[in-house]
Amino acid sequence: MTLLFKHLPTAAFAAFLAWIVFLADTSRPSVFFSLVKWIPLGDKLGHLILFGTLAWLFNRSLRYRLLVGRPLVLPLGSVLALVIAAGEELTQLAFPNRNFDLADLAADFVGIAIFSWIQWMRRNRRIPEKIWE
Image 1 (cartoon, one colour):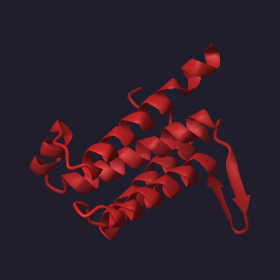
Image 2 (cartoon, rainbow, N blue to C red):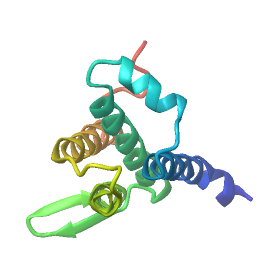
Image 3 (cartoon, one colour):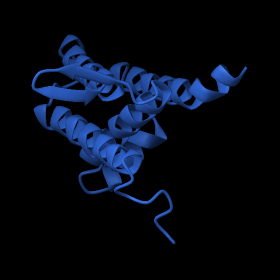
């Protein structure tokens, strides 16, 4: 039972993200798409936050395991989020109503990098757990 609750936020967020992608791929309306249009750079900010959060949750669920390869050492969850982000963006080439956008992919990668860096800094005690104290 503990295992379920440990991974539930990650699974729920991944399902939410898959649902958003499904809505976009099938040209269905969503309150999220309407909201993004009203925020300057809302689409890019959305990509940054969504995929950064996905990387954060993957890393937590995978207990911060590392993928070690010379010369890089990367968090496994972040690598998985990068693969999913790239795959999601590339699949847009198969949908006539979607547009492959390198800027969206860059926003995904920047979000993953920022969220992973903050997570790494917190885990190594370079950023306090409670910022407000």
